[in-house]
Image 1 (tube, rainbow, N blue to C red):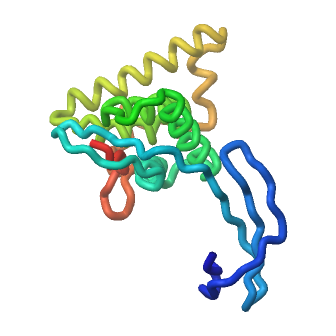
Image 2 (tube, rainbow, N blue to C red):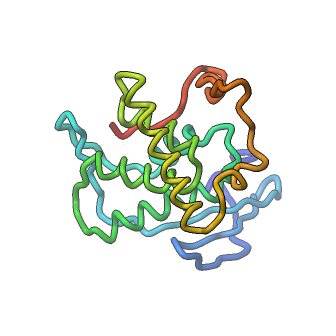
Length: 194
């Protein structure tokens, strides 16, 4: 295991603990003496993702994580929550027991979890995943989110107006522009599984 600080190839394990998805090991570099943490997971048989164009690609946890991180960019979503979403999806895929999963199913799993985690990240991911061809498709996703929020607030007995406290208030009837939610490079994030 190479040290992430000095790239020395030797380190010693100072502590090992079992965690819900594998083993957590604390290591100490043999050269610089700094400590770092590694995680080990049991790798099951390779899972293939069936793309819409007929191609098959091996499932990569890192690729899934990257897509979710891009969707959550500049949002108040802790990295631990993103890791939990990835672990949850990976666990569900393993429980299905299939050697192959359609990319559409994987995308829906991500969108379902992002919808609960962060609405802006959900819209970003959906805009790339569903490849909106017109503004009406985008507006429909936003409208569905608003209806879900109103239904939840009615079920909880809390008026919708009190749930929006602390959030940015729209001025003069105009909605914030889409560009306010874009990164510096103009990307909205989304999925690499299309």
